Picture 1 (cartoon, one colour):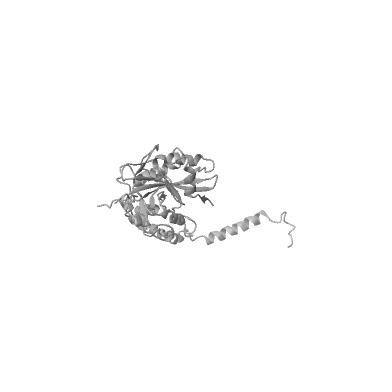
Picture 2 (cartoon, rainbow over the protein chains, first blue to last red):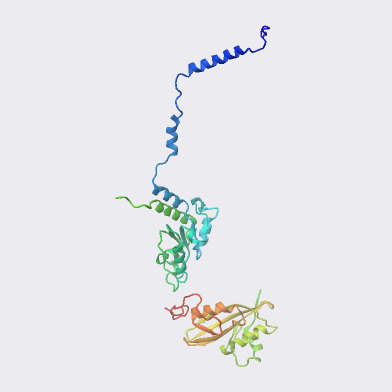
Length: 200
Length: 146
């Protein structure tokens, strides 16, 4: 490109101003129409992200998704429960990997084992110390009916003599799959719970 | 492996010390009078060549006519074991001397026998029920319970 000697500079100020003015004119010419607000995508996204629900449902969802278990493992069903706690069956998938040594922090009592009459007041005391709402899963034949020890002089024929039971899991002992099925049944039961009185 | 001593041989050794206390003896065990039970077990514990310093177990058997209390003694030093039995007759007010002062392990086991069989041990520091509660009627491991 040949440089015009008459110019003092390669780019004259006036020329730059003219280029700038052209750009502005062009932009102005193309900008007479209003650009629509970027809200058309909202319809789609709203459908994906806003849930309409009830307070009941949310509370029940929170409660059923993390039932913490209180310690009540008097006998051999505890080993199947330990297996269910372990990595193979892993009931932490249900938010219940924490075993609460304090009943005040627990929601769920899994009664894994034979109950003797001498132990029964302590089980009722642990149950009474748990905060509402609370649930009980009777795990195994002994917890349901006393099992093979039913006619013994010192065995409670079923935990439902001592505390109210929500879900019964049969077996001697039940396999961890059975216990997990029982936990899922309890979750369904919690989901149907009505926390507030119906109006009218 | 722990060697089970012959009851006859040990009973023969005890004859000089306790001439009238041993009622009968067999290969497995020997039977002593309950009055001299404490002295005999004390002797078995302290005599150097016997040295039964460990009480494995105490149990009781209901033969309906009488109850038999069975002591399983072991020597950790000599690696041998022995079974001593004693009897008490009748169904009520059964008394056997306690050996808690010799073996601390006898404490819960004598309480268990008292609880389930109804044999009380004289000299036990805490003679009460251990598995069942106060006020339980009867002794459930007896043959005539129910």
